[in-house]
Length: 215
Picture 1 (cartoon, rainbow, N blue to C red):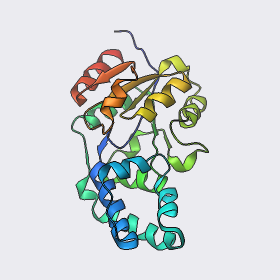
Picture 2: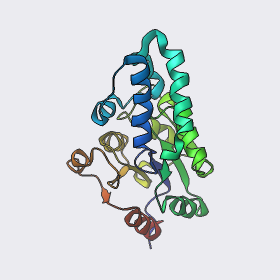
Picture 3: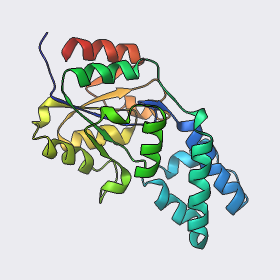
Picture 4: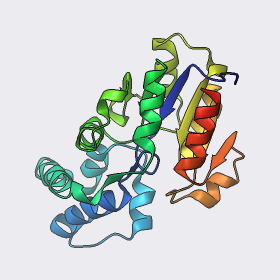
């Protein structure tokens, strides 16, 4: 079968990993302690874009340093709430065995990204990890995608982004690469569906079948 791509870029939360509940709980641990309030899931989602450090600075002001320490302590100690979706490791194994360039482009900060990827045992699959701390402009800016295509000298039409959010679609479009929107844990799936991604997959199995066929 014809190989369609030379490089693959993955989002983390909601794409590789079931981490949304851990993130909601981590922010609410801070909100309760420092702001005496609890956010709804949707209120936390509306904060997404900047990495955790930027969000915590805005929320906690002069208590930022203490709040940051508490946030990451909670995130680490409660990481048992997070898991890799079944079948993801096999996909990464397949792509790695074929010597494709594999990257991460996430809005998460570098600390949280590496904690999650290492704890779930998949950090070694990625040739490049671009986080919200590594770009001037967050998603939906395509900056992280362009860093990846530039580093590995890839033709944009031969690169595939795999993500679950509206920001992933917009970043991919602006970068000029193809986009898979995965819908197995997308909090914004209705909005994502409106954007007409190149591919939609409702299960990891569907994504796996596609990648096995064309890579």
